[in-house]
Amino acid sequence: MTPHFNFSTFPILETPRLLLRELLPSDAEAIFRIRGDHQVTQYNTGRPYESVEQASDLLDAISAAYDDKAEVRWGITLKQSDGQVIGMCGYNYWQRVDQRASVGYDLARAAWGQGIMTEALRAVVWFGFERMELHRVEADAEARNTASLRVLEKVGFRREGVQRDYFYAGGAFHDLVLFGLLRHEFIA
Image 1 (tube, rainbow, N blue to C red):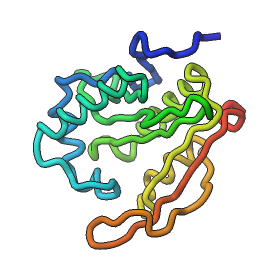
Image 2 (image 1 turned 60 degrees about the vertical axis):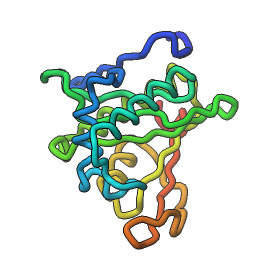
Image 3 (image 1 turned 180 degrees about the vertical axis):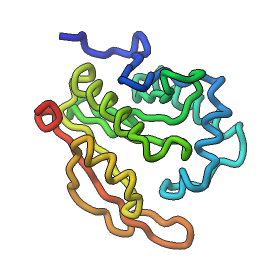
């Protein structure tokens, strides 16, 4: 059995096409291109980024949260590329007592429709169950974000409910679909 994850060394995950690695300050431009794209962020709370500094601040926050042993998020890269980050995927929080954590992700528009996020999310969920010893992984998606809903279902997440009019953005209220995946459902 692989030892329990303790944040001592940042874990690198590999899939057939992808390398998921630590996000670095040098990734700020790539993150800005992702988070600054309105089509990528249209279902997120908050506005698209307007500067590289916002991406740098996000990377600093991700690094600090990792150092605090609160979350772990990977930069998604294609193995057959220059190593540029095309997305992010990881755990936004980890409730150790309850053995549960929540995943979130972003992917550059040029990489949509290729199964990349499904592949990355499977690796991240596997890591959660095997190395973080999770019992449950949670996720949510804005109800109109059909691509994200499909990704979660392909990985095995089950819809558990809808938080109606959960957040206000763009002059309207939006529903949030809640998902959960239990260890025995994923391994089976």
